[in-house]
Length: 452
Image 1 (tube, rainbow, N blue to C red):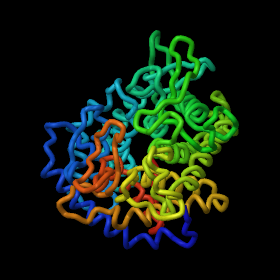
Image 2 (image 1 turned 135 degrees about the horizontal axis):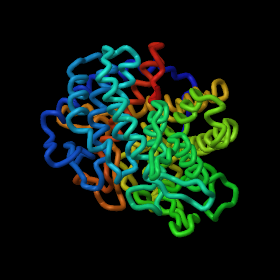
Image 3 (image 1 turned 135 degrees about the vertical axis):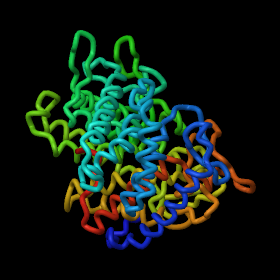
Image 4 (image 1 turned 30 degrees about the vertical axis):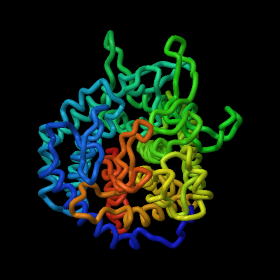
């Protein structure tokens, strides 16, 4: 991609103001038009949100978007709706032992509300605070219990596919463990054995860094620095790693760009979180130098890969090894084309990655300027047409995302050859989260963070 080195957060304010105006209308349309009896909204078909019974991993993004809308604009309607929906509908997600998505669902709702109270944006209320904190404690413990040990003596939070499966996505769901740990909560197992949520966070992050991310060190024939595998498979009998795999990407040996984006977003914000901890807290789990070292190495590798393998304007295609991508020629030397005839782009990967790039750049200071500018460059593209949805009849905010192309779940409009013109709940949420981050930077407001 071509990084715009002159962009500032202030330069994006006009686009952000337009985004929040459109966002309000989109949220209102979902509130009034979507049939929630069918399940959580997941992705759009012909501009209207639909559901998909895989797991209920997007409901927190729906209600979290209402909370972010209030955060950005001060519109009390969205605060009331976000609070009411969190109380009424999110409790099953707190105790859901069947998914790896606690950081997505619960930190986006209970966590955002607690953050607003900590910032003084909500009036202090002891019982309301206790309610949010209890939900986050239990969510972190439920996430941490979903554990597979590996041969090294460490382990990982396994995906909904089963105990053999480590997903790249879960690195961003570690938010739940971090907040639970900060609130002083352990996972209590048999015989009152207390397990540290910080220990599980560090071990999962280390296992992901070792097996999900490649570093160009000759691990296999497709070992390119920064490449990621969506899924890593382990033998649950002896804990040994067996092979890379992919659920939503093209193959185990290509890079599904949304899985890449989850790693780009996840590691920098965990590095930010580690700054709040003492050396003594980190010492039992490898120590600050080792832990920050592997996280930073992973964050740089995946971020560099994204910059090198995405289009000139910062928008990636859905997989860097997609079977017809070669028909586009050198796609990295021109802007992405969501209406091409060969492969879909994924704007949701773009907005997720953009936030991680900005956070990594800020974490590194002067050394990280290229990452910060790369993140702003991506957002400068995606917060404008043809990615920003200006159609009042379309439920989505960010167009040209996709969900599961191998399964054929994504809508291909008449006259088109690839999925386009649609939105997804995680893409819309993360666009709002990235927009709020940049807005706060532009206005010199408190830095947006998930942790306490």
